[in-house]
Length: 231
Image 1 (tube, rainbow, N blue to C red):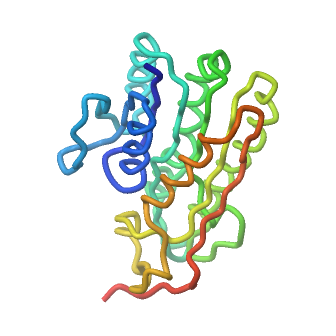
Image 2: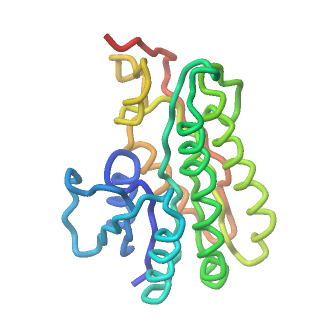
């Protein structure tokens, strides 16, 4: 059975992506810090408890997966965001965003790249719409996601001759627990946000393209631009 690795798989977008990949016939290794609240019970889902900021442990976990499985898909989804004026961020929050949103995907991709080249596999990076525009009150978050998008574009050019497909997905505001650290959230209307299931659906579309066609860049937006302050 072909295997997939998904980071941030314990909830939200990563959990929905994992469910889609299982339905498509993949054995999913889901990396996350806490699976106690996840609602996925499936023989083809293997929870891997790991904080992606802990590089030595992360490397060991990935090496263990490589020993036992043929990895065809890597989804770099784990992410964290802190928002507000830049001077109000702490060095610790800046480090957490850079390490989680950018450094971890670079490291995991490096560890799996030889396998993904051999298997002509997929690398799917969950970036953000903030990677494509000015992001006031989210300068660091936007910078990490812009870096991830640039990495995606460059890596595709580097590895496309081996059959590797590299895709960057740029979701706009999503109805999930991601904004737990922010003083704002999505609007109340369904037209004002996208859902984790819809992002997972975009990945299903990418995987179903014919061999030889690669959709390298997807941006998902709600019909209406609407955010609201938390009470």
